[in-house]
Length: 212
Image (tube, rainbow, N blue to C red; front, side, top):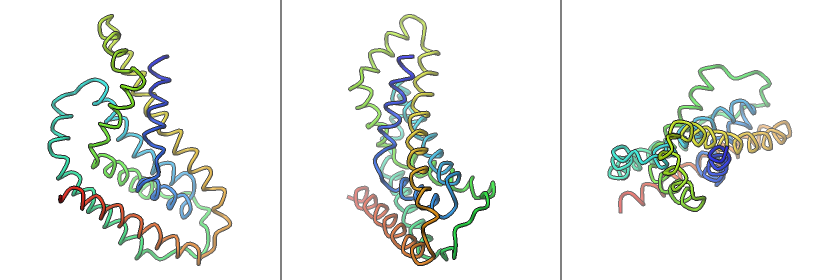
């Protein structure tokens, strides 16, 4: 239970800062509904879980490769953000809020876009490492391995990270969904421009970091 609770805390803390993934979730919640927004966040939650697993259990080869090639991975992620931002600018805003459930294809596109974007930031591993150290998870994992509880500890921690991240996306999309039906076409048009500009800005900033 200890690993589960600490995993939830870490997953929530890593997901909560509002960045490009948050912008995408807010935008998709407003235009397509809470389910679309939450599924979009779910892609990031799965990627966070993978990075949490790598950070917690010292999968050295994968972790080293990701850090060694973080520049190229970061450049790819930055370019993808810029492309998404341009797409947002060019998207025709809906005239009214749609009450229909998004198609499976629409949901999958949202899920995989944030999954790839989150994986394109391997420095996330360092965030997990810092939080694990602060909560004493590393030492606890070593103790669990010594007493033969590696499997159960891994399952609890990974499940906790995923649940904590999903909890944040649930709270965010639920809150945003409350405002959804009060927004008209003109506001949607500005939201497209604001979210597009934000994504281009995040992507441009990422590119400047990795081209230094």
